[in-house]
Length: 56
Image (cartoon, rainbow, N blue to C red; front, side, top):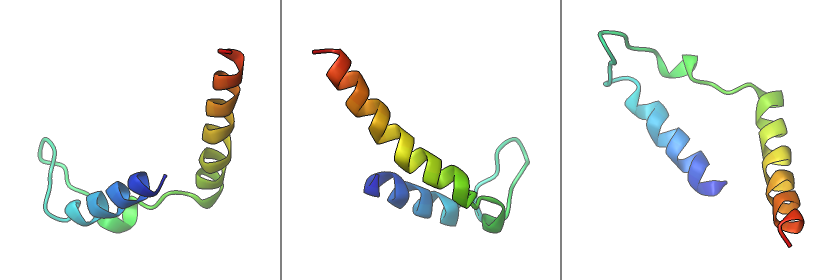
């Protein structure tokens, strides 16, 4: 999760200089919503543990 956060932070800085097919965005537009972030932080580990337990 820490690596993903680091990639997001670095990628957000690169948004100022990168454009895709002539479209560029401001870094402020790439801000995740708090509830979606909390949901992902809680559900992804839960799904990983559940899949591991079901695979036994």
